[in-house]
Image (tube, rainbow, N blue to C red; front, side, top):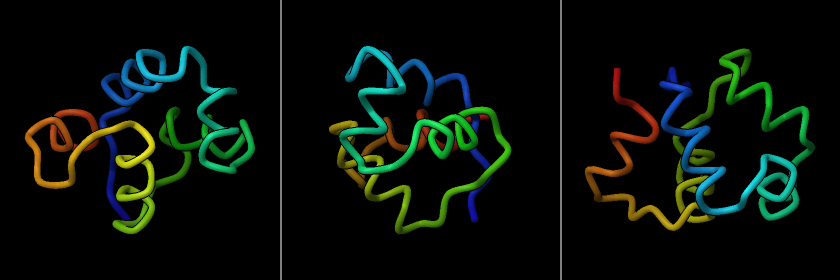
Length: 72
């Protein structure tokens, strides 16, 4: 499980979907699940990061992926 830097992820979700609710609908998860990740209560596996990155239009081989999901 990867530890996320939550601020860039939160911003990217807002940028692409406008709200966590719309993002949750797009990826087929509950708002609670999304919120748990964004607030750091839950981590994502590598596979989950790939799904979230695709939904957020972030290439897996990009520096943006590192910035949004892993930057300190």
